[in-house]
Length: 266
Image (tube, rainbow, N blue to C red; front, side):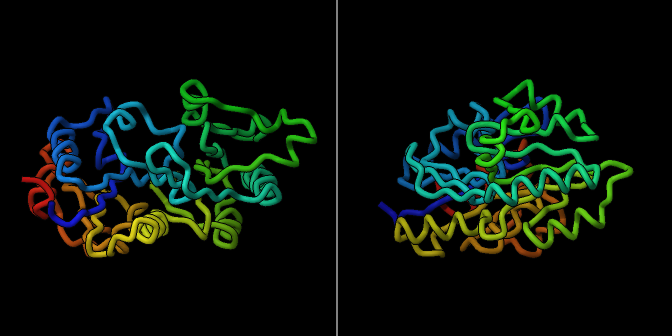
């Protein structure tokens, strides 16, 4: 068998098409062929495990780098976990209220939201119907002093105190501006890149045998770190200078064509 490679895939825009969400048949075939070649396949996503849909979970991945590197799973076993301290979680909820920013907070098993926030948005309301969700404003004192989350998604409003919120994020977190006033806010010590680094060391795989597939700026650290970085054809232009190769669009056999290009499959 050829030397084993390890492949990392973003979800949205890389494995999953735009709504109505689907995984192209060519991508499913490419993943199957790569497994048959003995390569290791990992999802590397900003989503925590509880927010990864069955469409992805049923594809037979060896593991998941979740929450921008804050949890790492292999063969259903948790290998690494990092969370935000309760003190900082509580302070974050306070600052979001002060700055009039809506948010949901991600945990491995679901989300938290703040029913006491002065602002709300439909994204948060819709998600509450799809995944396990708890209102942190209803926590008793004991639970207030214990709860944590791993990352959060913030939805800025027209009257949000953006400068104050940005200063708070820059002090305590990393954040990615997804456009449309949506920020993904993550731990400073964790990223999609640290997730790759952890697994390469754990599995004793050289960097040059790692491949990362992504499409947006929140994939940038992963794409910069991996031995080979693949931008989807539908990628944001900002990531292209940092990628080894740009394949075709997600719905034009992008995953399959990239794997063929790098001779990962026959």
